[in-house]
Image 1 (cartoon, rainbow, N blue to C red):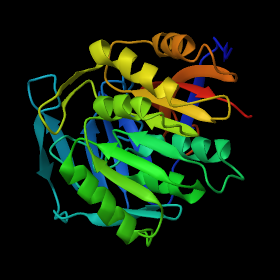
Image 2: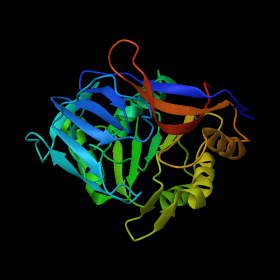
Image 3: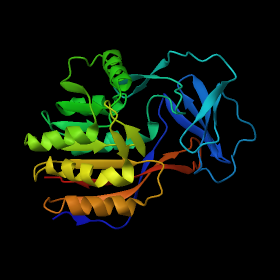
Image 4: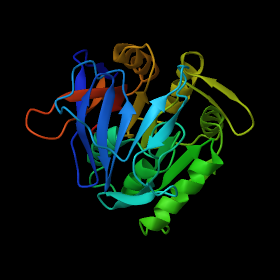
Length: 296
């Protein structure tokens, strides 16, 4: 039975060549994405900014609703078709989207590193990326073996394929699938499939390619239960991240503790965060997570 570690863990994303959190405060954050800087809202930045004045290429101004509405306001010309960035060997296109983010989630970088550490030395590890979005995590996992990438958005999967081409990784063993994540996982259970590692990053609310409705609190337990059925005592990890919900990482850990009751290893939970650049950089929390790992 997996051990539940009650003390929370912070997985901290540090700046790299193509990304950095420059400053944060008063409900906003200033970030650099390659040659461009952007201001975006962030309710976790409760403190005051350290810089008196921010200069940016654009700012996302939220609307009056709570579901991510709003629009970009540009101070300088920004390539509307995007521009190339890199994380390690993975290259991808950053772009200002209508959903306030820029086509990838930089706070996931320590998760990509962690998954790589779990699979170190593996040459044929089969992994599953549910809600895989534009594929940066999928391409990172593909260094260790075949990956199944699932997302309900045709546009996101198409962008993931383009990122694979940009990274010269089109020959890597990746299955690109447009499907509802919960339905796909349930079918994999019925097929008797098995994976060495699974990562899932579900939204608070979403719709599948055939109009399937996803509500996190309602549907997450069943999906995570199916994910656990796709693992066995030789599997390495299950990683779950959740954004923008009124939920504790302890709740996620309790769910994993239940569904992984028959597996060895350990369960941990905590926050994802990004550290500001410069001396004494503050940590800006971005999401909660829970993870099961098994060193074998």
